[in-house]
Length: 244
Image 1 (cartoon, rainbow, N blue to C red):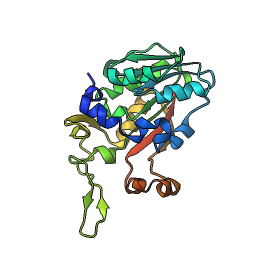
Image 2: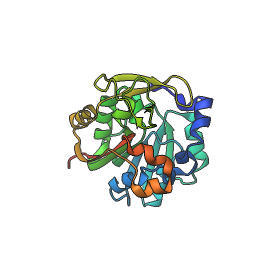
Image 3: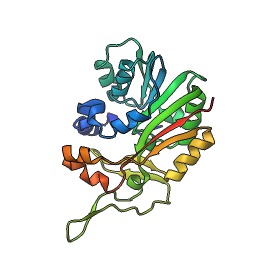
Image 4: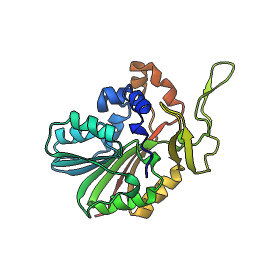
């Protein structure tokens, strides 16, 4: 079962303070790049894997989606999502993505934001998503970049001149990483970028776009704290498609 760290009171309280929690998609600096990868949502049936507060579910409906299903392992996240949603075409459900089953050829788009790096049984999940998409359907997602997940002690190294360097020790050593972020013992799964691509193509997907995301100069000017994110990719964004 997926570690349900988001129901830990300390973790949930810390996560609630993030810009992406308080301001939704507009508070996520990668959102413009991720949004540009999305297909036309008019009339689409969509599933959101790891829906959190339901920000994308509501945005998809605003963009014309016919029906959106949001899945999450966290009851606290789902409770928050339901409290913020007044739309009968959005359905939230408690699901563990480690053992997810979905109907065949039911969705036009699968979407996931910053969830896949928690999943141990990722090969099975990708096969499930592939079969749940209609021919020509798309899977658009973000995940923590392997450069970010690789280190055993993920933190900036600062030299005597104040220059920051991100360690990438253990990059080729895939598997569990345990970090402390809002709470102790947060479990993530490190995979190389090549492994993500291989698992997607093994599942049957065609790669459409890969973005090793970093902030633009305009974003850094508006939010100087983003400058360090230009030193190494924290996230990557992907758009893949099920062949017609």
